[in-house]
Length: 126
View 1 (cartoon, rainbow, N blue to C red):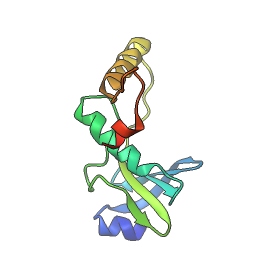
View 2 (spheres, rainbow, N blue to C red; view 1 turned 90 degrees about the vertical axis):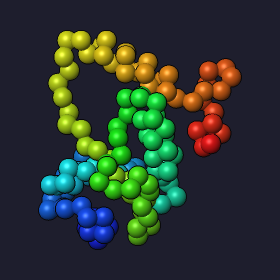
View 3 (cartoon, one colour; view 1 turned 45 degrees about the vertical axis):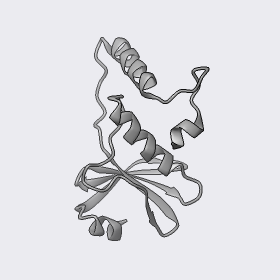
View 4 (tube, helix red, strand yellow; view 1 turned 60 degrees about the vertical axis):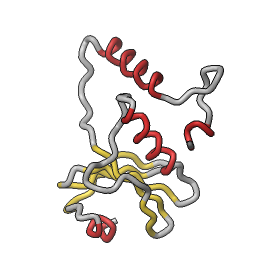
């Protein structure tokens, strides 16, 4: 990770594990970028990157890819790595249900659809 970060000019002095399951999510400090790491061949990283770019283009409320690096999947040592903007966890305000419903609506209106309202994997890959 440090070699790739150096190539990408990301300053890393510390790493915080955010999530460790089938994918590893790391907060890279002090640059503040979130790295998602998955074993190569078991990831859907390319689809995640494509969807994030498409949905952001429609104004949908999605996590942004890190602007510090090119938005793509990086391959290193049999792992697929993507870099994302890190968002601090916030305490929900009293209007959270309404805000959540609005965000969900905007996300669904930005998602490609096929004839009967279901997403088509073919549409997502076009």
